[in-house]
Image 1: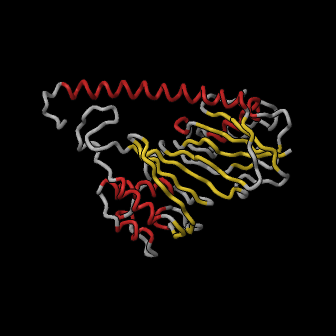
Image 2: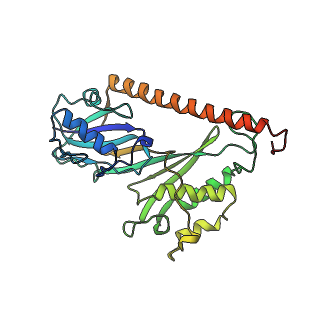
Image 3: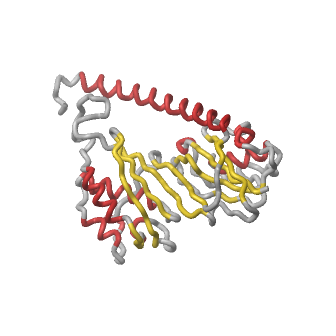
Length: 298
C-alpha cells in the first residue's frame, strides 16, 4: 500500500532536508532508517535507494524545522509511525500516517503549504524576562507596520525580487502575524513556495517594522523591475522557521498515540536543553551588565 507519514524534525541538527553527499540531512536520516528496517538497499553515505513511489512534500533549508513534513511511499502494513521511530534519532519523529491511493505524490498532490516564522520581537526596553536591556541592541518593532506590510504582500504577486528562483515566482500568498509574548508569529500559506521566499518575506516585514526600511520597500519588491542586490532584502535566519502544515484533498492523517507521545517527549527535551543554554548566556549578559555601574543604557 502507499502510505503518507507526518514527520517532525529539529532542523538545527541538519544541513537541510534533501540528502547531500557529505552532510547529515533529514532525508538521509529517514532513508537510513528505512534501510535499517530492510525496506531499501543501503549504499555509501546518503546514497540509500528510495522505496517505490517515494516523494516528500518539500525540501526545507538547513536549520529549518518541521512539524508536518510529509513523505509518502509504498510501505508494508507493519511500518507504523511508532515502528518507523524505532530506527530514528530523537531529532526526527514520525507521529501520524494515512493510507492513500496508488499514485499519490506527496509533492504534486499538496494543495497548500503553511510556514510559521517565530520572529523575536520583544517590546521596547524588555528582553522578554521582565529585565531592562540596552534598547539599541534590540530595536523595537511596530506591530501595525508589520501587519501593513504583510497585507500588501498577501494576494497573487510575482515574487521574483524575493527569491533566487528564475521560474515559478508568481504565487497566491496568504500572510498574517500574531503576537505571542515576545514573539511575532508570521504565518505564510500558499500552494508552494519559491526558494527562500518565506525568509525574505520575514526579512522585509521585520525591516519595515523596525523602521530600518520604509513601507514603500514592499511595493518596490513587488514591482516588475528587478531590485539590485544591494537594495534588496536578505533572508531572515533559518532556525525560527517551521514547516507547519501540508494539506491534501481527501487525506485524513491518523495520529499514532504512542508515536505522538514519543515526539512530545523528544522535543520537550530539546526545548529544555535550549532553555538551559539560553539561561546560561543570559546570566553571562547580566553579570557583565551589572559590572558597568550603570554606564550601559538600561
